[in-house]
Length: 299
Image 1 (spheres, rainbow, N blue to C red):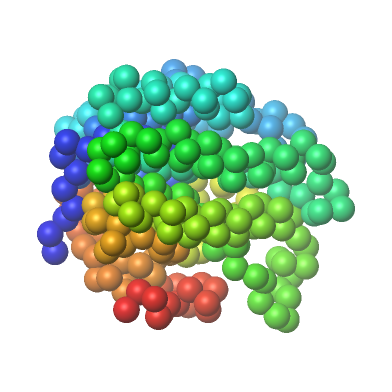
Image 2: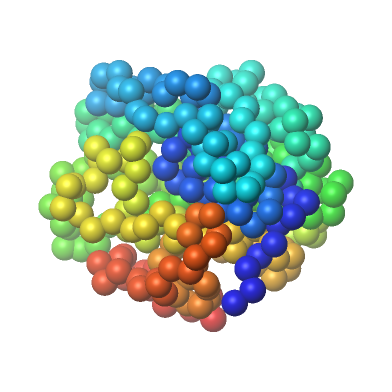
């Protein structure tokens, strides 16, 4: 199948020093976009706090840029701590200055410090909502004027299958808890994205959500995933994001798409992150949440 072509487009991907953000940046670059990658870590991994302790997680923007450039793409690294209001407040302007515009915004950066509600600190609660609702709001709001002026734009927010309600009877994982606030913020992100899609369709700006169907093992998420849990290849979510970044808003906006189901139902030719080789057709995992398999709105 023909692959989306993004030559001449500029994309900003947050949280792109590793994991899903890095993979999305690589795939958009392989389709021809100039990709601005942002995170806290430029030349050295950043320290993050999880479970009450400081941790060093591998991954830097320099590594991401190197991977993209070695595959023939173009990337620009811009350091930003999105928890800092001043830094996130200037990120869109800095992107426009560095790359000469902004067509695609991928809100991927996150913070996950799981805890049961009765044991969660106020700081963790606030930081979770900041990353998954306030930051996408702030960056989208800042990006919209330029997209309106250009006559088109694409905003993709990275969601989560945990936004779906836990199934009854409750599994041991749900009873143990820990992801309730994270999941609630992702559910709010879904509704935010759907509402924003309606607000922006008249300006040809598409807003969609892309989420893993189950789980993707990344340096940042590894501690949160049981060692024996079957995870997904990150290339499928990268392909799904790419597919949300090229059609007019009247043709595709307001979707909540899942990384294994969407390529399967749309019969996408999923490529490696450098865009050079096709991967096997996606098979939706049998253990996916039943509400995301065969969604009628995709027909």
